[in-house]
Image (tube, rainbow, N blue to C red; front, side):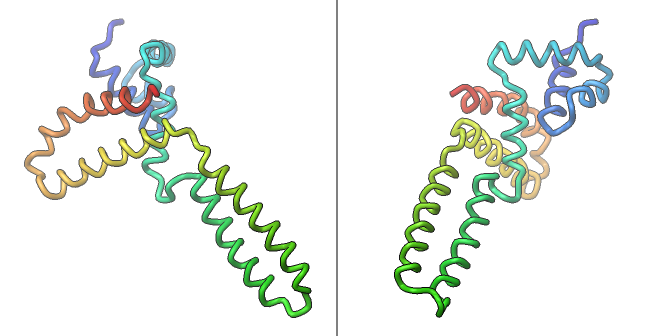
Length: 167
């Protein structure tokens, strides 16, 4: 059975929005194998649905990303450890210096690792977040224009995916 592009787009958007491929297909009355073929054809054409799922999750995250969460948690512990070292009356200055040097090395390693994130995914996540913010802005401030903006949103999302998802 031939499906209209609109149905393919709906399955794609539902999958990118967080549904499993089988759930997205079922929602729009499409067999799973058909949706799987669409996804594979899209991948071969450069439209990586799985990357968009990841980018969408990162864009939706209240915490910026896992690396940022890890870094935030590390920095909290880092500052607590600094206070503990400074306030420990039983620790010699020589031991404090050794611990501080070790802590500084750990800090360097953790921050370096946190920055080694796939830049393509982060750029795409930022672009998607800006797009979502724009849609919220239009909905709040120009509700009479939302239908017009929605009519071009899907194609613009594809442009964003092409521009930032293929680096």
